[in-house]
Amino acid sequence: MQETRPFVPWNQMNSFMIDAFKGYGVPEEDAKICADVLLESDRRGIESHGCNRFKPIYIDRIVKGTLLPVTNIEILKETPTTVVMDAHDGMGMVASYHMMKKLIEKARTYGMAGGAIRNSTHYGIAGYWTTMASKEGMVGITGTNARPSIAPTFGVENMMGTNPLTFALPTDEEFPFCLDCATSIVQRGRIEYYAREGKKTPAGTVISEKGEALTDSQQILDELVAGTAALAPLGGIGEELAGYKGYGYAAVVEILSAALAGGEFMKALTGVDKEGKPKMYHLGHFFFVVDPDAFMGREEFKKIAGDICRALRASKKAPGESRIYTAGEKEYDVWLYRKDKGVPVGEGVQKDIITVRDALGLDYRFSFED
Picture 1 (spheres, rainbow, N blue to C red):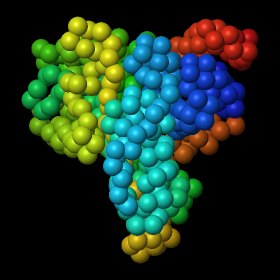
Picture 2: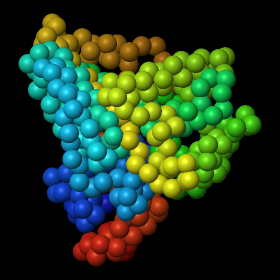
Picture 3: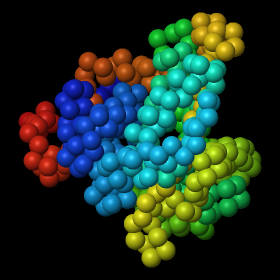
């Protein structure tokens, strides 16, 4: 693993982001949650949702007024095993943190628990929420809708978000089995990363309204907003490579994210009104927690899950391949590499950090400035 970008120490980046969020009105305890969620993405090497998004998705939206820095959570309905929240356009990461804390305690008592949030905003890396459960020896499941990006099979109009369907399963290894991926081939955050780094988006992952492949990353972002381009679902365009499966899973996430909480969906989540002016996003998320102690026990579950993962990794490899991975393993390897080095930051993120620091007058000096 070779890294040429400069590193910023974890503690320095964490302190900076907390101070920056506070500078834009986020309460300190909430700022700590938000900073940790973003840094967890970078710890796992999922840079599309880490520091790369700190300014454009969170700070800029607070400034623009489409994300409220103070999160006023309202409990709309609660039973022994369920919770429905309204985040009132506050920080989606904060609402999700409090949701998962509630559901873990409910699952500890009753074996299972589920919740949904409406009128929320981007909740960061989905795997953060499921891993909160797996750290407690429980199964975590979550999904969220988002700005329309994916076209249905045989369509070219962006109708649904990239809609991740995410699972974390505890194992007896150093890391859980954590499957955290979009239901599109490539997610919008990855294209944002490509655009910032001046890279092209792989051909075949995005189509224009005329059915043509698009690769210019900035053009794709512009056309996604304009509604003249769409992401292909997992499996790709049409049915030959089973794109209908990705389309189907995206629809499952869209329905659960909106219907469980009575929230908004698809074209209502664009973030702009009919006149093209910014408006609140009103996203929806759903969460489920299962305690294996209500079945045959946590330790039994973890051992069997670990045995399955080890058997998969030990299976016969394709010619020329040296290793088989299970979900969450690559992310753990990235953490082992980065934990003593820090967060790698490219030029685009460096500029964002300096812009936010100078706008707030914060007293930070970073190694990449030397």
